[in-house]
Image (cartoon, rainbow, N blue to C red):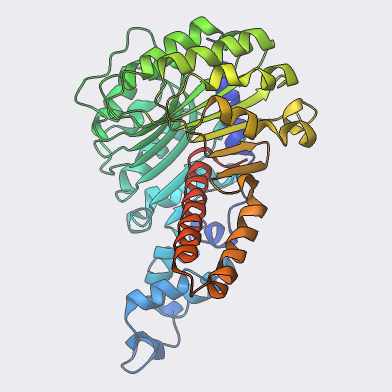
Length: 434
């Protein structure tokens, strides 16, 4: 199934978002203020009654969350009490750069009280920067065993290494990983009883079966068809991201099988995003139709073309695809090819109104950064138009406040526009926006 394409996608997708480790994290991992060292605090006046720390620690913690990295370094050396609060802020969300992954793990392995502060941990592929040997995996295990409060873990490590995560006391709500989907990985996710959101990018090992009593709280999942076939049926999955990053996979027979599998979700399934590489228009349209045939009750559909061309012919034929949906409200189309028809503003300006004729339930359409919303009175309007209408509504309500009927009508129109903004926001949260 050309897994290397998908793993390459995961690496690029997260590698581009990796930011340099904050200076504060670098300092902490070098042990500059990890160890309790009373002599480091010459002035303890802040700990005395009537000092700054007479303020509740919860309030100080809330204030420190707004400080920059350098300021957090300074607050950490004010006093022991300030250090404790600062460390909780510093280590809450940890995303080390590639050259800081091992120092990060050493810090967590050596100082359990710091590791236990972490709620989010993002670990890129260490093999990009290091020659990884057996000791690395032991270090990884020791660090994660100490991260008892972790709820969100991203670990982009290709291969059969899930066994090093066994027995960790954290209970994840979100997991993103490229670990192989083998028996050790199944044991890992069996332990994670609170998992709600998952992105599984690892190689699927044949004949792996997921016990029916696992992942009972999972509602959102991103994976390949083979993994989805093991996860979705008879679970309450509501949102799925289907990854088909080889153009030979976006065919009607494969999409027919995949979407049929998704139909067995007891969620029910309401949102689907497909990430793929387009080949020819005819094959693409047939694949789209297979989705509508098996999943006619979707509320949201998003399509992201990582390669290939979204042609004018395909967009013109979209009513055939959209007519298969019964209650689709949100449609999002995105493409990396800036020269294709999806980025032609003149062409796309009229698509939403034409598609609405085939799918009357459609309320929002996002096309490569351009957003249209359907309004009962004004028809299809852009996001800028909707904001202008909301401002005008506020003014018009003042002008006609003595006319009850008009006020009621305008109020209903305003409420509808506000509901559309909520739908649009939810769509952006689900699929990352245009």
